[in-house]
Every structure is written in C-alpha cells, then in structure tokens.
Length: 280
Length: 273
Image 1: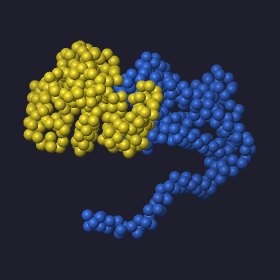
Image 2: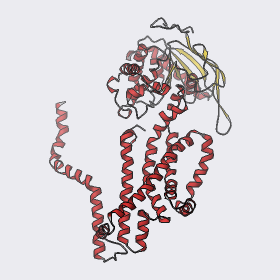
Image 3: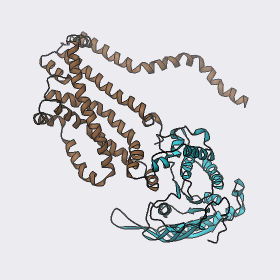
Image 4: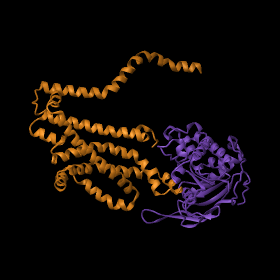
C-alpha cells in the first residue's frame, strides 16, 4: 500500500509547479470571461465607429450612448422606467396568477383540457403585435390595454410549462397518494404542484423577458410615457444615442427581473434549481 | 393455508390466518384501439399472515396488475380479492407499498419523506410520529441521514427510505414491486439481506414481485411462478430453505436445485408461446 500511494503521487508532484501557477490564472480567466467579452465588444465597437467615421445617427459609439444618458433629466428617466416596469410587472403578475391554476386544471381535467386547449392555441397564434392596436382601441388609453398586451404575451409559456410539469409527476407517487386516500386537493398541492415547480420556474424566467417585450410593444402602439414611447420618440427626432440608452435600460430591466426570479427560486425552492441534483 | 406460520410471535391482535386471498381473479384492459387485453386470467392463491411470498414471472405476466388489485388501486374485472377476509373495494391502511423506483419527494429531506404518508393523509404530523419515523430510519440503517436530501443519497439508500415510508403506518401487508431491480448487483444482494433483517424485526405479510430467481429463493417462504399472457399461476413452490438465511443459503444444494427447476418452468413457457 505505501508503495502504491507513492507512485500514484509521483506525476502529481512533477506537474505541481506549473499547475500551481496556471491554475489560479485559469480560474481567474474563467470567472472574468463574461466581463472580458463584454468589455472587448464595447472596445471594438468604439474603435470601429471612430476609425470608419460612422455617422452618429447610423450607429453611435458607446461613449455617445453614455453621454446621451445625461441629456435626459434623471426624473424623466425615472418616470419612463417606472411606467414600463409597472406595466411589465402588472401584466406578468396577472399572467402568473391566472396561468398557474389554469395549467394545473388543464393537466388534471380532461374536460377542461379538451375545451380550453384549442382556444388557448388560437389566442397564442395571434401575433401580439397585430392585436395590440385593436386592444388599445377597445380598452382605451389607460394602463389597462398595456397590461392586457403584456399578459397575453407572457401567460402562454407559463400555462404550458405548468401543465407539462403537473403531468410529468411520477405515476407511482399518484398511486401512493391514491393508496392513502388523501384526496384530489392534497394530491395536487402536496405532490403535483411542487413537482411542476422546476417547469414553472423556467417558464417564469423566460416570461420576465417577454413581459418587458409586451410592455414596450404596447407603448409603441399607444402611450405618452415609458421606455418604448421614449425610444419611438427619440428615433423620430433622430436622437439615436438616446434611443440606444433606452435600449440599454430595457436590457438591464430584463436581466434584473430574470435575476429576481432566480433569487426567489433559490430562496423558496432550492431543490428545483437545475444544479440541485434531484435525480431526474 | 397449510403453511406453518408462527402467528403467536409478537401477536397483539387476533388475525385470520389468511392475509390475502385471490379467488379466480381476472383483469381485462381496453387498449387504445378499442380491443381488449387479458392481463390476468383465473388467478387463485392465498398468502398467510406474516408469510413472505415472491411472485416470479416473465415481463408482461400481470405481476404489477395483481399488486395494484391488492392495493385497491385497480378493481378486478372478474373474481374477488380479499384482505383478511374482506373484499378489497378501495385502498386500505393495512397496506404499505414500495415501488420499483424510490419515488421520494425531492423537496423533502429523508425524515420528512418518511412521514409524508401521514402529512398527506391527515395534513399534519405530530412529534411522536416524527419519533416513529426516526425509529424506522434507525431500523433501515439511515439514522445519520435523517436531514439529507434525496439527491444526496445513493439508489440503495433512497430505496431504504422508501421502505421506511411504507412501514410508517405499520401496515400488516407490505407490497413490493420489483423494489431492487433498479439497483446494481452488489447493492441488490445487500438490500435482500437488509429486507430479511427488517422483516424479522417487523414481521408482515410480504408480496414481493421480482424477475430474479435467486432473489425470490433467498427471500421467500413460497414462490408463485406465473405464466405470461394471460397471467396465471404456473406453479407454487415451497422454499424449504432454513431461516435465518445468509450467504450460506446461496450455496445450499437445494437452492441451485430449485433455481434450476424454476428456470426450466419459465423457459419452457417461452417456447410454448
């Protein structure tokens, strides 16, 4: 045994000197890679615009976009951001509240699935951008049409994922539930719904981005504030750097909402995270 | 039943000698095209109180069907299934089930998984019931893993948790549906001896479905060898190997003799079909 360990550790000892140097460097690179890529792209962009003298109304340099941030008053930014965020969040929450129970019902009732599913497919097949003007005409000029548009674009993925997750519950667990005569309610709340959580959370993550898309589309159609409105107005006055700045804020908003859902999942259902290793 | 089963041992409540009785049971399923499939036909056998019976047969012989009939999850289309003299009309508390896969709830730790049947049935779990779960975890050798999540346990350990869960309501009958078939060969042998140890500690009528001949011989008092399509009793074999069984049982000449006999039974059937 002692001989064995000795020979086994030999190659390690030889390679340990360069490894001791390279390992942390590679680790650093690995951790910094996303940031470095980002900085690299910005540098190439800035340099390209400068070298080829691209007109600012075609493609502004990152420095122009940054400068544009200060051309608009901070309180005005705040108003636009809040308008878009409010519509995105309200539409998103409405979609969540309706889509999850609906998904459960579709997966557990054959009758509902037969009657509601075709209807949902038809609604989903309508391009949201095309119905947005109609909804605005129908529902007036308040936040309501914008919330409905956001709702329409976000809720379908949540319904489908919830239904899929609920239906994917191992049949043995349903048999266990039946053998205990626990009742349909507990079967859904204690087994089926928790089992669907990984599915539901991945849909909730995708839908954050869709919610921002929905809010912006609605603002393009009819609004007097919001980042979508701001971008539309800026481009019509050829204030392209300002439009880009609005876009940057939308990206940050999407990422922030996505991260928020990830955090909620990490706190309330850590086992459902892809790295949780649930054995499925 | 002519089987000599010691019912005086630890007996607290009077029990009829027959735990499970199948009386000319048949099960016909409808397939997707509207045709019918006879899964089980004219199946009759009895299992005595605290007897360990293995059901052995080729795949598709309706082994899982008869387990679900006993559990009250499936109603036979003909004949009757009785538990302690009463016809099975719905699931009962006298039965614990261990499935092929452990099917633990990934959001609960080991201890919460064991008490899950109580939480699921009554909505709450008392302190003394948690203590019972701890005692069961000690019985299955997982005392130190009460707080572990299912994802952190090996396949064998997960199946031990599933056994503890099945024992929680202290059932008189334990139904096991190929419980070790997803485990590797070494873990499988280990789990067989573990199950015998648990069974000697908590004697119950066990119906153990398997397609492994050595596993059936090692565990059971009797083996019901089934024929396939439609499933029926081909032969019932008394396993007269002495208990407690151990590794030495595997080298008993009667073991290999019975093993060969069962293999011939199953093999000739394949040729007939």
